[in-house]
Image 1 (cartoon, rainbow, N blue to C red):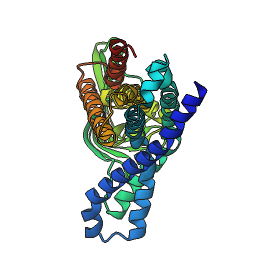
Image 2: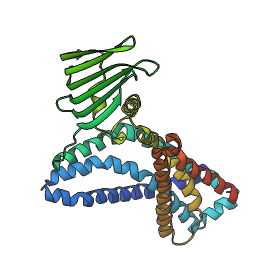
Image 3: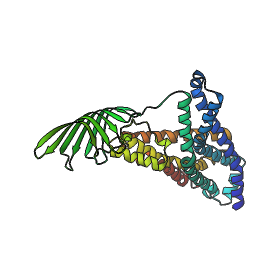
Image 4: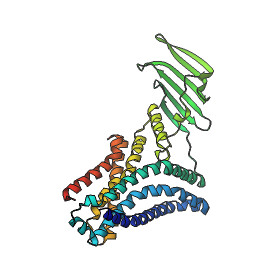
Length: 357
């Protein structure tokens, strides 16, 4: 049995590495030609283009691993079947599941590697690639925001500003409402502008209404250091951050920040969970490919490539639909991120039982 497994791995590895390089090249070429007209218009030097594509390489590796694994397993088993070697293995009383067990273990190991690779290399290089891309094309990202309303850290404070200037860290047209634990209004502050002073907001031309008993007392202050208003400027920024450019601790902190501010966070939370499910995709891919590859005896290369593309497209389309439903609020973010994985895994188990492999 050990010799059979060694033979299987020896046949599998060259195909996997070759297909991995092939799919990486395809993704690199797609990205390059999609942006080629932008590079030409801005007269971007070849060295900058090469650096952008080099920084994109780890992301391409991450995307290519599941597809290359699917193709290489299907092709390797199809080749065994075409040479009647698989028939000899099954005729010796060895089940297909036991025979392809090293490939399934390979899927598990690649899932763990994908997660580690994504967290420690892909995120940083992908972020650097996007920053360099924007830099060479002279496109800047503005974090300034208009007509912004958020909740403070204590939840009882509501901020509204007509405009937030991220460069100056100032607010224009400020309205702050403070509520007690029962939601009753206890104070309202209107100000012409506000400037961040490191730990609090300093208000200019402020009109303060504070509740005293049953009445509200009005006070006007030209310069009011509101030390109780400590919500940082980052909360007022335009939502330009993406989870793809954050490591897990940063992503969790960002999601919690959105939740506390009363801003939509389902989409970000779904993308957060999707990172885990995407890393696990080599596992389910290896099971499906092992079952499908054993069915081919003719046109092995063509059928393996076809099945790889069809199953990959089907998997990602289902995942995209589930993620979209989660972002729209029809299903939970966790379910949206993992539905495709468990659907394909359940389909693989049913396939094994149906054909008694």
